[in-house]
Length: 296
Image 1 (cartoon, helix red, strand yellow):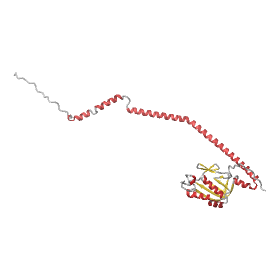
Image 2: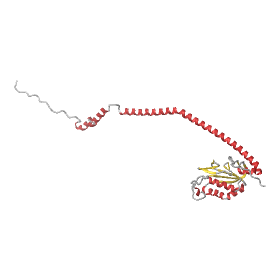
Image 3: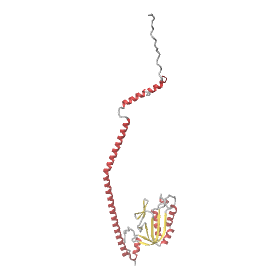
Image 4: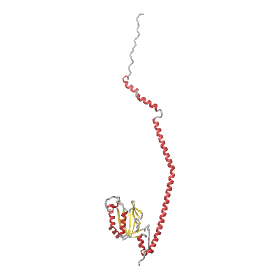
């Protein structure tokens, strides 16, 4: 055998081939570590501290509790109303019955007053006939103790459609702020003008006037013998119709009414009537009455 030395075979020590994505290390790192470490730590702490119920479930339970509380309040209110309803209904029924009783009593008293007034009026007329002789009817007429009818005048006065304030004129000194409304002083002048023009008997809205009658105001209402009247105001006067109408329109009070029409929009109409009917005075009171001594 030959004495030649043998050398071990030489093996290749070359490195493995590089990865295909070796040139994209930045993208690979972003994919494998998408969450920053700080965010990861915060999420871990939040998970450890909130081991209770999830937030969505807690919100649902809170809403359910609020609805339950509202339902309890509504139920209690309905129960309370149902309990108090019979009491309120009973009180209302008692109040209605009381009103009906008092209304019935007032109607009964009014009927008694009317009956007594008729009786007193009859006795007064008998006394006038006994002591007045032929002048009894005239005295009764002037006193307003009997209803009358005959030719006369009808005067209708109403408020203006649209009240307005105007300076000057017959109302300047009265201090009225609404010059389109008919006032007690207007009715006083109209009635006095009719008396002065020759009226024998006068009634305002069916309220007979006597020597003791008063026309005054209470707020915005006009009172005739303490009875409130509402517009339109109808004034009926017994007398010579056409002559009474002409005399009134030519008088100072008739001119006053004309100024109210022209300047303040007060609505008024005057017409002669073939026949007007006036009732007797409802509350004629004779305080002092003595028969007059006969003359020689």
